[in-house]
Length: 208
Image 1 (cartoon, rainbow, N blue to C red):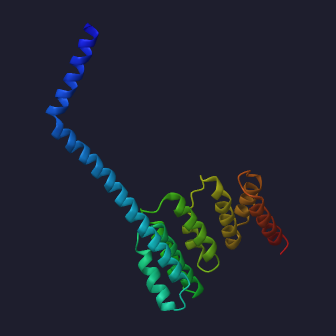
Image 2 (image 1 turned 30 degrees about the vertical axis):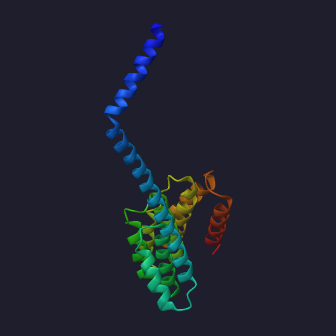
Image 3 (image 1 turned 90 degrees about the vertical axis):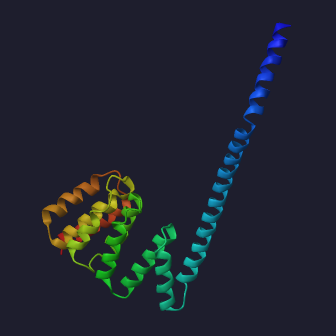
């Protein structure tokens, strides 16, 4: 009997607390609903923007007008998004194709010094720029680009060392060539394709 009374009293207490705080509970519930709705609207708008940028990027990429291509890509490049980064690379490639190598180098540096771009993307950009501009700008500038490669990322260690090796070949630094060659051949992280390229270059340099 006492147990039944105790349960009744407990439920009565709960009911009274709910009645006394009904406004607070309603407001709290409304706030939660508004927060959830806000997140849903944000993700909807964000996804819509990404879709619009994707369409704009693809339309601009295959534009028959060079002026339209540059104008639209510049607009997309201004956005802080993945497609903004892709548009920036398209503009750089366009300059390289038009032999504007030093301008391309400066554009790479702007991207590499952008605080909104993550370390992995910066490493990709540095590798991309170093290979694209190799033998097109002076060695000091290539060396500058290489410094942005994060060699602690295993998948990029080979590219980092290969570029340093190529730079040493260009500079005619025999001691560094031999040292980097040994390092590349012995490093298990480095792919066979990179090792084969380095072997061929090393053999060519020895007998020519």
